[in-house]
Image (cartoon, rainbow, N blue to C red; front, side, top):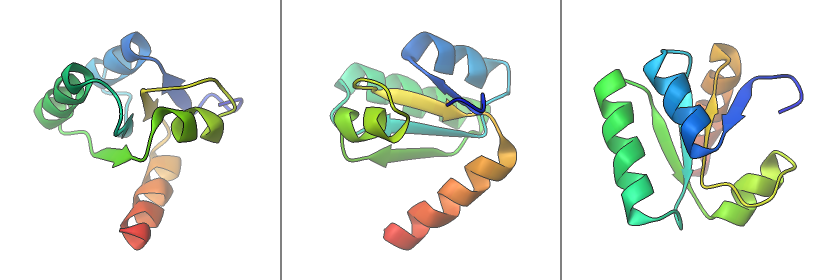
Length: 90
């Protein structure tokens, strides 16, 4: 977060996706059904990979913030590494 490679919050992530800055979107599994649908559709349309993880608390703790439902990785190298690690865990 400090390095400026992550955008969090629905509005910021939506802007990052539409401006083609997002290389990966991460959504908490306990986000609202509307939020999940919105970002799945948006990522599919703009061809951005999406990962769904455990919960808002875990996602927020990962970046040193309170609960977060969604975040976008805007650095391609960082996004690639997270995707690789995510595929190992699954």
